[in-house]
Image (tube, rainbow, N blue to C red):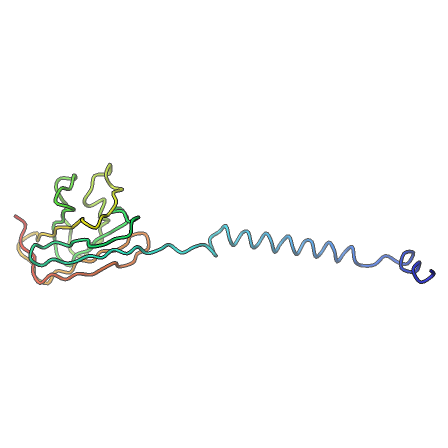
Length: 165
């Protein structure tokens, strides 16, 4: 019985201090984990969409063959190695099309759509018509870029592009 009293009546142990230190350490660890999760350090990376295009030399058209269901024109950009004129689906609301200056990055929706129609889904039957500005061009490369992730979706070279009528 005396042995048990020694623990009860003796000097206080350091367990209260250690308990507080452990509780503070656990709280800091939980707070750090929540901060890392919320701040996006562990977040999900943005998915690059799949857009399959086919360069049609005979009619200077870039046809969309297949695409993911959540790809919008305002998420795509275009760059050309020559001065060209583009039209989306031959019926672009913004003045019938848009002139692109060589080696300049253009968001397709701002280049080809009015702001009211900028958020339009890209469908498998869509196409981009390309015409040359300032005379026919040879060896013109068109690059389609996913604007949000800055990823090249495709690069297409035409041996020649007819002059805009």
